[in-house]
Length: 453
Image (tube, rainbow, N blue to C red; front, side, top):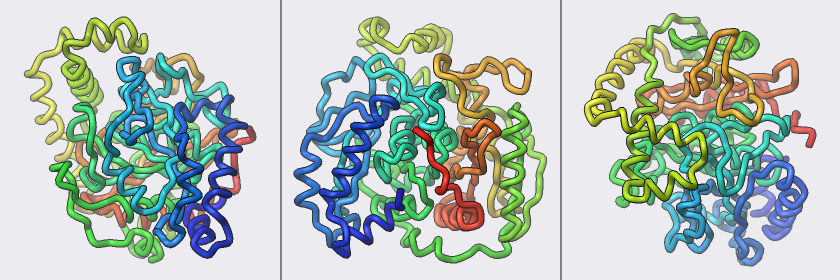
């Protein structure tokens, strides 16, 4: 599939018409969605909106898919929970509002785990999303439907959000580019009170430049989100044209605590040292604390507090693995929730030393390859027992620190599955992460490979 940047250029020149582009997307959705289950609700007015699209607008009628926890005026938004099965918002999320203003056509809503609580896309309303590279495997999550839709070529761009890895994990599993922007870079309103202080809005794309294009159009402060950052005044699309030179890159295969599949580590290590073309790459030893238990504590307490008086109702209809969360919540206290702040500062003290010396930190995105559907995680990694989220140790630390972090395809396993490499930047250096990502894409392109579905 062409990049979104190329499609927009053709739309603006008149070589393509928005209705034609949308029609091709809808054809692919009709053909492939029954196999993959990426889309769960379609925008019934999409073709009407495509025909009325302003081709002189920044996106000129580009089709975009929206994750189902991002509210869309007049289009069902279920959060993939039976508690919201028939919810139709009366206003757009800021992200959607800005996309529409820029000329995007909203195609429909994409699948995710219920409330986005885990990194495995399955739920009681719509069932699992299958990985286009191997239909027996998961896409990860929580932006799994969005990742599958882009990887399968149903749409050029889909929105995602990331509270613990939910853009980067499915990007890794589906062979895509996915950037978690700096916390606050893209306004997040309205939103449910979960992943508080961790959540960032972003996109899943096949090309780095497409993410740059989209972020240029949606970043910047909005008073409805008091944590949103002022526009940094940088055109990311222009910034990525500059080739990095003389950068210092730290490579850590484990952050000091992770257990990683040896094949994944080998692929990422080889990819990381390709970046020596742009400066210095050095393997470093990091002694970072694992905040795995803290992430679970935070998410469990926030969701149980949010559900509140509807807990009894939810227990009857929730995704079955969530029942353990509810039991766990009974043993947790406010004290444990507050102590997460101490652990977060301990994490930053260990990472600050790295970013005082290096421009970027590179790690695997995920510790394993895409695993089989049916379990929310593998039971062991490299022959060692794994906790339920022990396979995703690299992403959530940078939700706690708020730094920009991206997953970019590093290569493919022997059995043809995508493996992602995570690139983490200094605070607020979204442009830098995009720039080094584009440079890696230029020397190690992956877009010539596509799922054989």
